[in-house]
Image: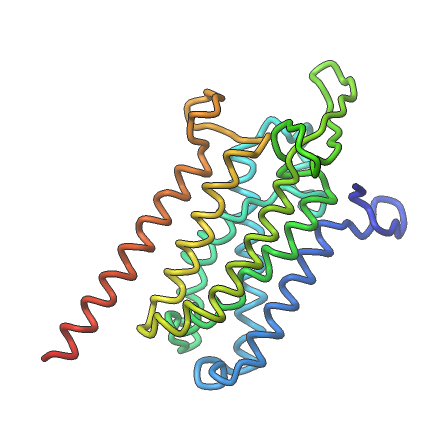
Length: 264
């Protein structure tokens, strides 16, 4: 696994994590813009403004939650800003986008619920590709295992010694699950959930459920109470549970409300 793909000059280089993230965003944006339903929701120019704003917000939110959970991994001040080396929380990115992007969409006169419903169909592609970058960067690694598909992971002890161990490729697990969520959203979910707000809620429910499950195999789990046993839930898992429950309740309430409105 190699973080650096191409060294340009001095401190400048193309990192695998940043490249995979960029590819994921480009592919998801391309699919979103090709969707015919997009034309009645947002213009091409408006989308360019929104995606630029969303990327900035996602980076800030994703990095902030990562630093809150794993501040000890940053050894110097400049390390806070080295996002190209890995270290973005997908949950932090999603939450920040959900909080701030609707405000920006409203300022543009765009229905943010319809926008997010359509975006939910393609958002899994971003994580699917970005997680490959996590794998090459060596972040978000798994617990030790003797399974045949275990991968060799390098880390450093507090004494500065290099240690190698075989771990779960949790980044690849996440990538595969994200691809499955993408397919599920395309083939099943969008055909069954027709009410505004249900698609984004379904995506949040599925992706948070995936994060909750895979986190049991993560070797870099962090805890609100500083405990570290397999039976304890990590901070990311607790956030995931909350998102999953709220999303599930939202799907049900939207369905109930739409039926009551229809019967009036």
